[in-house]
Image 1: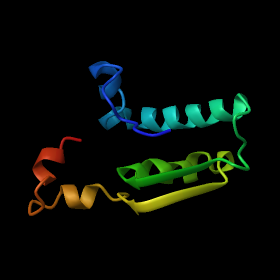
Image 2: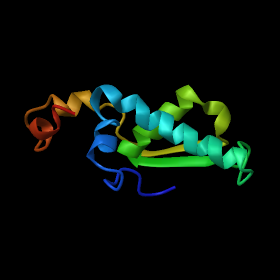
Image 3: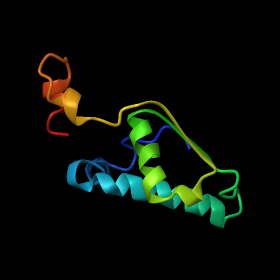
Image 4: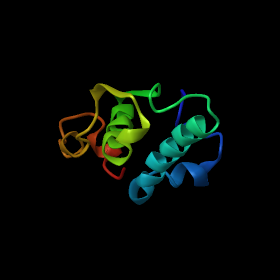
Length: 100
């Protein structure tokens, strides 16, 4: 699964994965992984998830929510502390990203 986060399903769907609804994205990822296992396309013994930057946050959450569903979880330079850089006014995107 690649390219998560497009706007193909509309603005409402996009908004339902942000802010107070962030958990929906994590649940969606779990649903996809469960579907792959249910359809016998893979098994937890073979399923690996990898995330880079913000995707590392998603994959890191899998470690806590459903470690049983994956053989391995790979976090490449994970963005797992979004609060600290967002609160730093010296970083260029801090003010833009603050509402998120």
